[in-house]
Image 1 (cartoon, helix red, strand yellow):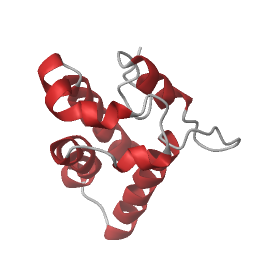
Image 2 (cartoon, rainbow, N blue to C red; image 1 turned 180 degrees about the vertical axis):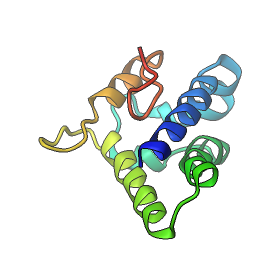
Image 3 (cartoon, rainbow, N blue to C red; image 1 turned 90 degrees about the vertical axis):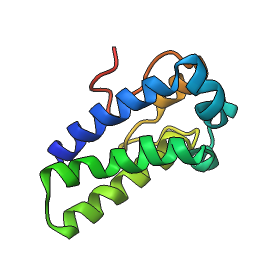
Image 4 (spheres, rainbow, N blue to C red; image 1 turned 120 degrees about the vertical axis):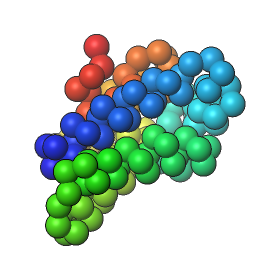
Length: 121
């Protein structure tokens, strides 16, 4: 999973940051930011281009580059779906992945572009 995570983080951070440039934000990514205080439904409230480029390709880039058996790949995709919903649920649950990092992104729009906080300042 570590290799998948690094590939996904580099892809997601880069494409997500590009989607925050004025033209792409206005025409593609703004839809996702209609909720400044995210709810779980916001994880699916996304432009199809945004979803394909950032989410779908980001989820599959690690398995495509690094390969792997189908079972860990399915677990990886399930983990990403879970994280996406937790990121947008609006609650911080103890003992599991925290959504606070992504909540700041939806509130301020200019920070926290990654999924796993590896490339964010």
